[in-house]
Length: 259
Image (cartoon, rainbow, N blue to C red; front, top):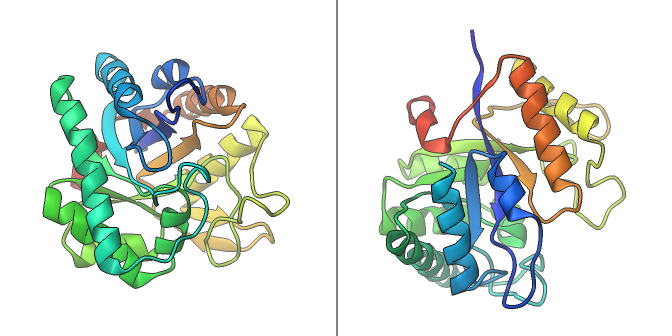
């Protein structure tokens, strides 16, 4: 049976005069883009440019909401109430939906960024707050959630279309969570190692932790971080490797019947 999967990247993460990552090249490789909505990166012009380029290349659009932390790129934990989180996520989704509508596109999924994503992966209340924001804006939006996380459970609890995601360029601990970026070995820099890891996840349905623990997983989507210097090489090698094995790469909405 042919394996079909989505390949996504976090894009639109420049701001003002600052560019981060090679979005144009990444949009020629991935099938879905998670676009920063102004809280950790991005601004109206960056968002517009990224959306237009994605639409032109047939790449599906996702909102990438974050804690309000431009200086820390959204990677610093903040303590906010569930009501605050729900409102700020809805606000950011709405911002990208407006840009998308003005640019001939449609937002079809939502993926939390950085510390918000990592904290919601293990915090049921936070995961549900994100899910309620998504459902309140548009219940047809796909909740793109870390595989096996509280977000994945929250999405199903709220009856949202929920896609489970693994990371090509990140290491996992024995609980199936991402190794924090500040720790040695948190990032996978070798494109061939990353591709081998992803193939194992797809073919065997397991994540291999840093200690060798095999953790069962469901995979609908694979992420390559667009802000890493090696992102284009990593994503390009991953796509070539997967397609050489007969794996089909499709935009996330095309997988709805599998959620």
